[in-house]
Amino acid sequence: MDQKIKMRNYTYIVECSDGTLYTGWTNCIERRLKEHNSGKGAKFTRSRRPVRLRYLEIAKTKTDAMQREAAIKKLRRKQKELLIANGQLAKILEENEIMI
Image (cartoon, rainbow, N blue to C red; front, side, top):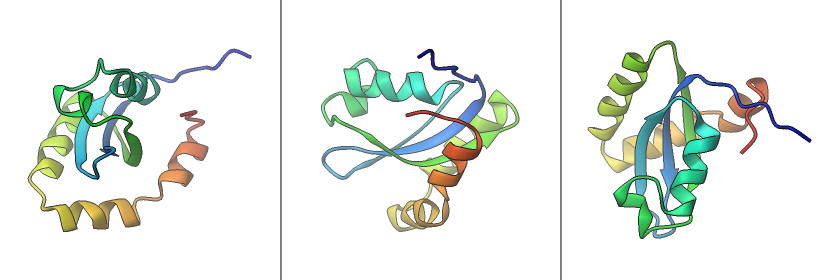
């Protein structure tokens, strides 16, 4: 079965195996998660695999996604945990037919 991957701009948070949170942006969340979990993603996540997607936002533009990434990175952990808790990840994945 072929899986259709939609290219959009995303800001995301993954939780690493050691419990740390990593924030990034991408235009293909499926590919990016595979990169993180294969050791080809960010240097930060390479030694902290596997990672699990915990939060996802869809941005209108690459610039918007990058600006949101920068803003989230400035938040304290508790604030990131609130984003995750209120983020409705399952709903976003389902409504946008994102298969991870």
